[in-house]
Length: 394
Length: 144
Image (cartoon, rainbow over all chains, first blue to last red):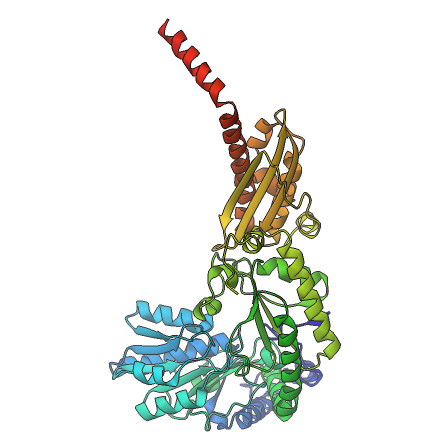
């Protein structure tokens, strides 16, 4: 099987898996317990915090462990909203194609009286810094813009966006779930106040993530209970998972440049091959995108059928079609970059691993081409398009 | 459990009666590209019996499987029987569909009904002079 859905989740690295197993077996003590078994867990926990902080150029006490990216997003936004509310600031700026962990939290805040501005992301899938600058108001409490988009992989000008927020005195949060471990992220260089991350996107375990919050930012609890995480996140710490996350992130950071370079080459080979399929288009900017991300629309076909037939041919991928989401609308990301429903239903996301070979890339291209041609062969839309009854969009 | 039953996957992977009937007696098209499903059915009808049926579908796995199964269920059957085909019968013949995919079987039912209505309409046009005569006669009778 060629696993090309690394944006959904990744296989755990051997080192991370070893950490997880070893600690689950040997270091099962509760990090809050007084005896040495518990204290060893506490040491492991704090070492993980140091290692993770070092990767993103933060201080250990600025790292809060969570169950993953969604929890981190929820807590970051909630906290900023509470801080804003106390000062009478009830305006939040985000982008149209954020993850639902962000969008749904914002929708809830709107019901509580906050006003939300969603910046456009344009055809290339990029937020414009000048549009952010123009949208910031006196009462803006938070700007939250993702580091890299989870569907089309476009990398936002985070450093510039952060600088604008810093200058205007507005908190800046970024959902960096897709970016961390794959491209360089530095909270100082990038002017980031809060950042969300999830271990399973960088070859760590599922159920572990973290929130970076700049010193001085007062967090609001999402989970109430014990005094873990300095009272900001209750619940017995998932020490094996957290330590495995640190192992995976340290490993990823050490090999980042080299892996990114190789993966980018494979990505571009894949893009080049797929562009040869008639009436297809790449979604999002061709270069300002994650090294692993390829996202296409193919006119005249529907994404779920494409995925099922690719699965039969040993290729695991993803789509933004309505049928894969369980709703009637295709991906909000594709709609946000201006793809109309007709073509947004025919999307394919391939998020490749760094170990993919040229042969595997060529195998994907060949099979996508064959399956697209096959499905177009009995698509009434394709018939109308080729008969000239309908205008091609792509 | 897998997303779809083996039957759905079989009809999706090896759809029956795919294609076009150029001189179809009835053609029906339902759905739209906006919601991601379009089904088109072509019927050949002889002596009130559906002698051939073909389909074209733009849509997900269950839409393709539902189209395929629906064509199987009406092929060789009298028009009246095809007219009575329900989405439930299509879904059951496929050993069930996930709840949120039931609309695919509804589309299949509607596509067939649409094609049959088209057939009835065309038939009506062909024999229209006779229909007028009949009307006249019946009117006369009612007067008596």
